Image (cartoon, rainbow, N blue to C red):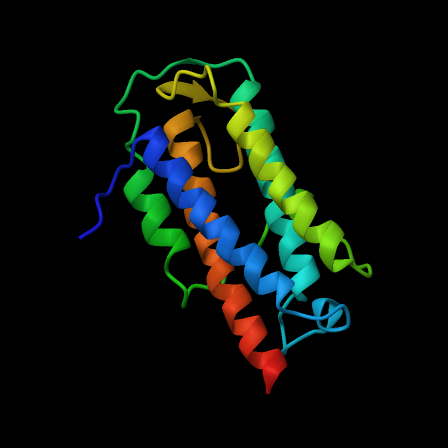
Length: 171
């Protein structure tokens, strides 16, 4: 059984793994497929990559915002984040500010931007206190360790979606 709350180091190893899988799946598509709607009510693979990139850039920025020590268990929200984002039967609505633009995406650029957003997240975490609380996020006051768990679960959710997209496009 996987441990519920991961350390910062464990989180980055897991995030790296999920991003590598996501990048490989996107790279397996051709330029036409990256912009093809695979099934009803789905984003294209390019839009999915853009969404994850925008979200990760936002989390990287949040890591640098002014924060205060949490006056609660710093991993209190981890279980709920995991339960929500890894429930693949749950249809979720993306906040408007990370909805991908309706445009033609270039495969290599999309993958490079995705990887760059995760590098920025890592760079912005080098000296951060993971127990500090960040205010003003869509899901309320959240600690930095919870933010990293969110990034992992959000990326895993979209990795699952990318697998479905790739399967649909191969039919």
